[in-house]
Amino acid sequence: MKTHRIALYPGDGIGSEVVDATVVVLDATARKLGGFQLAYQSFDWGIAYYDKHGRVAPEDFLTTLKAFDAIFLGAVGWPARLPDHVTLVPLITMRQSFDLYACVRPARTFPGVPHPLRSDQPIDVVVVRENSEGEYTDNGGFFATGTPNEVALQTAVHTRRGVERILRFAFALARTRRKKLTMITKSNAQKYSYVLWDRVLVELAPEFPDIATDKLHIDAATLELVRRPHTFDVIVGSNLFGDILSDLTGGVTGSLGLNPSANLNPERKFPSLFEPVHGSAPDIAGQGIANPTGAILSGAMMLEWLGETKAAALIRGAVERALAAGNLTPDIGGKANTKQITDSIVQQLA
Ligand code: GGG
Image (tube, rainbow, N blue to C red):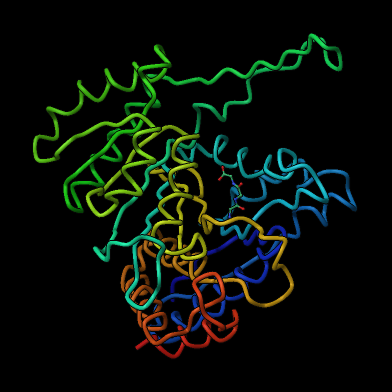
């Protein structure tokens, strides 16, 4: 029996509700298939931890996490209690310190789940977000603080190595799908950082002659993802653009509550991190109505990463069938609660 060691970081708001639901589905899947089990350790980091200790996670939290095979995170943030830029620090630190440079965020439409667009053409896209540098680099400061002349500087960092490895990752992913890659920049206005992205794309494209390559500026991309989302396959962009676009792909496919994500260190030198794309949703926290499918599908991505491909496929099929059977949470127009959809997914593990 193989044991995968999983660190759970439920976090804030609905984080613990969707993580609990995911554990139920993962354990039911392991019992059904046999051959592997999951050994969890849960950490109480987040705003409650901050209230007691004055920091969101312990100083040595990275050392603690390094011992695990994977990290599973729920959601972080509750701005009425602590500023978001404080609560987010451990997540950004994990991504950068563990070199989790490939953030993979699939979004698709599901039969039986309403979405806001007029067209009924199925949407099936993956946003690949550069996750280790770019606009999220901790590089800047305030000057003349509190005076009328106050200035804030924040400098993005885009390295050739960083751009090249994320483009290679996205090309390789496109090869496993519909063989189309769209790169998002703003190289008409940002004439250093995204011009580097443009140059690296031109250099790499001949190595992937089977992939149709396209590029769009971020403003045009937001328009086209509403007008013709079904025409996109793999979308690759910087840290900030990937963050923004994955909320948009969640929106056009029905709800951010449906979207999983993986923060991968493709070289496997560090544990990779899995989390739903959605945040902590303080407005519905504690009501038991959060949509757990984004978290559960993140659990499927985690099992696939750990080599349990059959288990991952089983969960994906069960989610699809549970949604098609009408178990819809309020964010997608239904009345089901978190427990009902979770129980239905477990029943559908056929
Ligand atoms: N489930 C992930 C979560 O809580 N995300 C909140 C957030 O704002 N994340 C920003 C980011 O992904 O960079």
